[in-house]
Image (cartoon, rainbow, N blue to C red; front, side, top):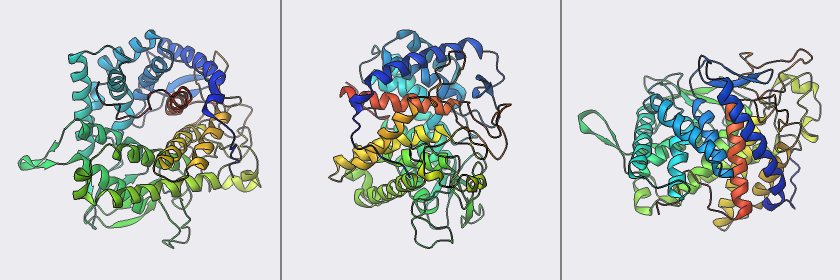
Length: 460
């Protein structure tokens, strides 16, 4: 289990973060220079070079959003120009992409970050530019909300690209698109001019995910353990009845794919932060603040606890807690992760996502009269591991930033070096983006700067 360093402080990372952003900027420039002719968005590295991997186009926002985060952290306007210009020129199709649930990934990472920077006074106020970002965010949230599958119990969920039967754990992190669209005063207009409330869809999706995707040790099945997360939940599309747990990228429906776990760990705390900005009157029709906050807090706490208990001592997880090769790594929870072992790959991208979730959840608990210090310190402990070798890619010829990430182990999409038996040494676009985002979050904590939140601050 994770060995939490209770003495770490955000300020302890100042020199490490300076080095990190120096490496990060060079890699962004390398990607912009060398991937222009890819057939599709860069997804993962092969021998240190970013390549495309078709499934859905869900990583382009991470590519250009990374440049925006780099500007945010360093004030280097060259990266602002990259992020702003590519968002303007290349991201429009993602706003109206009807076939995916990934709107928070692509559009909040680009349009949303630029809108946030304008609210913070970090980029020049422009009425037309602001309107451009806000229109994109309004439309993105409405399109996401349109992917709606009702359930037999009267709730529903945003279905994944697999179809109307499929609820993904990942979508908890993409609900930021719905939140921003609602915050900007938008609604989804349905048949016969029905006005569909985006906040209702956000809360309902979060409730459905908490009920079916997160486990609480209540005896739901033989593998019901506090905090275990199923990647996918399946429903009968005819009548909305829940059928079973499933997975696309994990080892089995009854084990925990750690990146899916991490999406839940980050998604719920962010929404809890967002709910603090929403009035009681707005929440009353959907169960009221007390019920909604309790539901999200329980899901976040369970997922975070499971991660702490089922991760190696440095906080970097193997790709699935039930992966069969772990049986050959006896005591793997009792020592640091080994990215170079011969049996199962680790997933550093899950660690970067989880670290931010733990830090946010711990801080949120502390602001609501609960002791969240253990979660906050756990997030800092993971960041210490990721900001150093063997995870931080210091080789200037490697385009990745965060090493030892895994995309799709069951499909065999990840590169296995010639001298290895399992994937290692490579990066992925979401891992690099979320590492930058977690580093920026940590930097804001250390400098006591404006709190990093997708929904704020309010417009000056």
